[in-house]
Length: 177
Image 1 (cartoon, rainbow, N blue to C red):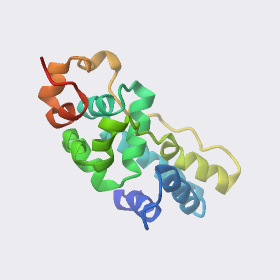
Image 2 (tube, helix red, strand yellow):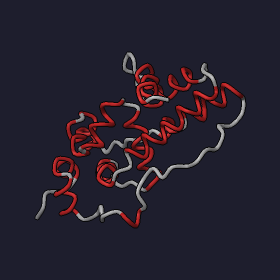
Image 3 (cartoon, one colour):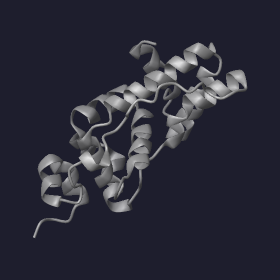
Image 4 (spheres, one colour):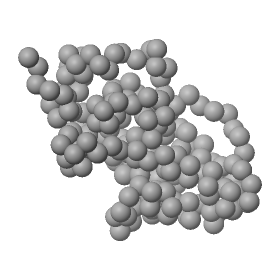
């Protein structure tokens, strides 16, 4: 599956600005479930590639700041939320995670404590395949989609966080003494 074909499913699912990532996931499942099972499998493989490409240390740090902590599954769910916002959102956040400080709902989260997760986006291919075939999505080779926790810099190091993600740090961290 081509990258454009993968994102076209998300683009159709985000048409008319759906209310939530859950609605994006429902729309994408409905779209994919009408397709050949091999195409659904290919879409799922491409999702794994997007997850791998977005599995950067600094994006994980951004998710950690924004969501007041993020273990591996939380980081995956954060990227599901990001994917539900489309290709440009993912691309911008991967290239420079600090741009997330410009997103209105993230700015508001500094006051509201909102958390950004969308596990349902990560299950689109499996749910579509089950609807289309009545069976589970075939197990494929699992890609490593995020760094090992032991390899990460210390996200509780506020000085390092301010250096790497200054705008997000200004929103989510207390001012330095």
